[in-house]
Length: 250
Image 1 (cartoon, rainbow, N blue to C red):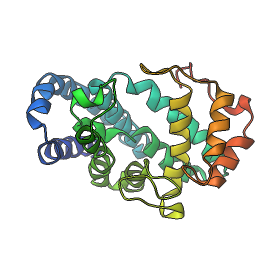
Image 2: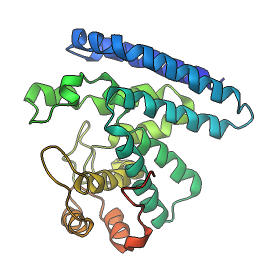
Image 3: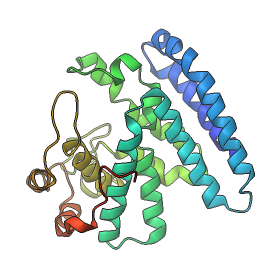
């Protein structure tokens, strides 16, 4: 049953918290407040799964929403970012004429790209200033952690590869594996551009948003370095009217 998937994933996440976090005591205190809300969330989603027994695709997407909601409980700033960046990723994938089933996989990977942040201590995740070298090392674990959580779910194996690779760069300078070019899954290459677009055009505590046109110019300069030239080309060919409104509830 699909409701078992989220229970397996939650159990995996808790195990990863124990094994991967150098600051487990901090996480334990945070999760004492976090767990009751998560348990309530799982109960609510389970009722929804039970109401759609004949529609596995819909049930899976309810699972994804539960994952997203669980992460939102840890960091409330993520919800609109997840939705925007997923919408941008889908728009670019459609421009590249990818098959519908491939786009669905990529969209799931995009929506869950930061699920590994469940294992990052809140004092690091919400830090406004520059991270220390040790904090950055811990922060960079989220890509692998997210991959491990999702790779245990058969329907999300392909999406988990996008989560694992979403910080890789086309020239090999990214992390965690230093993948280069087509070694990086196409969905991750598309997502990387969409994520940067959203980061540039959204306000942050340490800097204001830039215009969409300015973001396009900066992304074009990074073609072949941070981004796949083919993805950049598709992105630059898209008229402004084809983009979802960043301020809408996408």
